[in-house]
Amino acid sequence: MDLLQRIRTFLHWESSPEPEVKLLPELYSHLKAFRLPLILTVLIMLAGTMGYVIIDDFTLMDAIYQTGITFTTVGFGEMAPISNAGRIFTITLVIAGFAIFSSAIGILVAELNRGTIVAILKERRMLYKIARLKKHFVVCYHNDYTLEVTKQLKANHIPFVVVDPREEIHEWAIEHNYPQYLKAEPHAELSMLKAHLASAKGLITLSDSIADNIALIASVRLFEKEHFLPRPYYVISAAESMSDVEKLKKLGADTVVSPTKLTAQRVSAVAARPDMQNLLEEFLYKSDNPLDMEEVEVPKYSWAVLKKLKETHIRQITNTSVIGITKKDGKFVSMPKGDVLITSECKLLIIGTQRDITTTKELLRRRDKPREMRFV
Image (cartoon, rainbow, N blue to C red; front, side):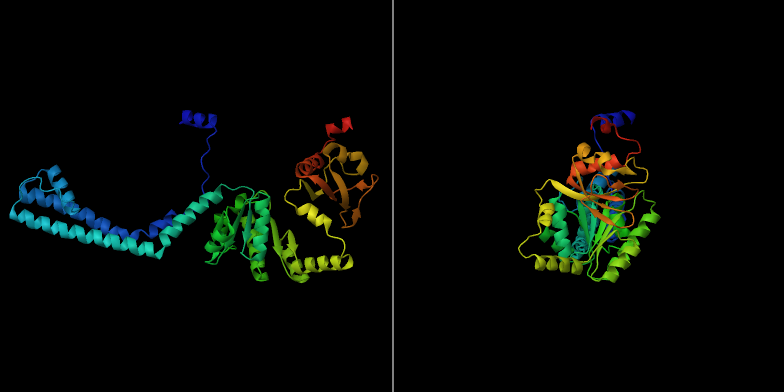
């Protein structure tokens, strides 16, 4: 066993991850109808073997073989001369075999017509695909918002699972090319296990009903506590009114988008400056654009705390630019000068490539002054 493990390690073989929910017990429950034909088959084989031994003095092996070819009606003939009583017994075996196989085929056709077994096998195959995902997003409820979100996720090569309780999800998944999806109630714990939420990066709920969003956010935060997860999920939701936005944030949503507010802001901006397009929006959301913009929080223990922006040399070290600072009290400083002081738990609005932004995050999380400072 140790040798096999060493070989697997040397060849970098990894066992396929298994889903947290096993569907085999559910599959076995639908195969219970086949128990009666199976039991009858065993009894008929036993009775046939004893009959040929008693009636025509067959050896045990010849009796088993004669019973098998007679019961299955393959028509190989007789192993040895059979008496009239033996022939009547053979006819009985043929009729019994035909009846048992006919009933088994009827049960199989009925189960296939229900579609339950096929659906379970498809779902089981889907669960194994989902189990391979890491740092994915669970997108709940299919609608117009979901379509646009999943397009962006696919464009940025971010894995995701779409969860919806409606039967039409199978058709929608084929139509809109969802690689992973589930037909399930998103707020149920079983659904979260199936969606492999333990390895997910976050959850997106964009239901038209505020009640669905509330139930899902509360369920996700409860799931975190019950399973002692090392890090909280990033939960994104949507709401029409500002009062609903505040409710969802209080319940535990990290980001709540208000389509009404966003539309109003966009329309007012276009109305004020109709000849000027939103270049920043176009700049940031083009899929072929290497640059990105992100807000990075400075931890309490960071070496950069209580240092001037120019003293950190972030631009020279990471090749990114700080275009804004949000203080702990919420005050925003745009285009900060080099003399601006970096305080604990403030947020730096940084623009650069995703790789350079990641380097900036790692730089600000250090406790000691980085060595790169010696060369700038």
